[in-house]
Length: 471
Image (spheres, rainbow, N blue to C red):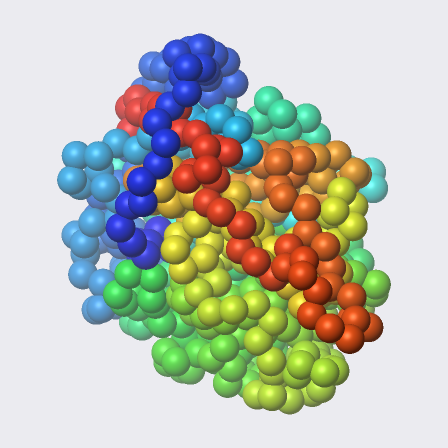
């Protein structure tokens, strides 16, 4: 997932404020602890690694990935870069490096994870043991061993509700001591590079992941998928089973759909990546094509029918219909790695994603289908040009209560790890929903306009970029 980050020219930005020295010092000795020495390998340069693991504890060859030659650099360490922690002040701030070298979660030592990405978040729905699940994408460990301990995906569980000082990881499904396992193994067949989760949700005590089978990586921000499908876990994410009949084929090879998924339900190239939202007895599924430049369409299904693809209906602009080919766009083009939630703070649904300018943005809506507001930039490309992904933490005060703090995960290409970020919604300009009964266009355009980049207005300031030691 990290290989194909869209680029654009840097915009001018304001310099650091007079608080820079104090802020950098407090981050260096506080929560982020980035200056403490570690003994850990950096995320590995070649991708995919020759002889890398293809499944849970397996050692299958990746030589079938003819379109992605072994040795093609996966991380910028191949070019001497080491990754950094962005120290920010204002509207959006960095709380913590969640994974990789120097992370307080010690993911290198505990889970064999020196590099990973995404950090898709959802609640497990267990009243007696409430946890937030976090699914991650392509993962690397010890680069000195054959295969670099490469895994297609892993899962973390966390019961930490005090997010202001970071997010502690409780545990992960394990292959063996010190090595988290791949929960959705790739097939090891030619034509499948990796298998990556895109969305997670809990229904009736069962955990569900929507995932995609990647056939090949293309130009920056583009890749080809064989199919997407559901997997289910009845033991809190420890073990996962593909759900038969849920495959939607993409533009890759349909023959890569494994036998345990049965015949694909449909060809649906616009529905390869997802974001889930539970609301009023339905699971809403926001859909995009593979890659980072697609528009969003919307499906919904009664919660107890989530495994029945024939029960899904699609928003066509005026109502819900069974035909997925008649869907209307609910969010504009160039939407990447989307997450959606209800915010009691705003009294609206919120959508976070990376846009075509490579900013992390938020939109608001009174209903799951929209109309959605203009964009508010939570984090600018000008401050973190290698960012991607924005997954809402369901225990954010702005999501659980009427608090103002919104927490989300973010990945960066150069660190190739996951960060916990925080935005103060008090600093987001207010938006007024348009009156649908008004006979004339209102002068107030606060709902539809995109607000200015906080990197240009000074509402967020980049103080420093702290290198990650040992990376």
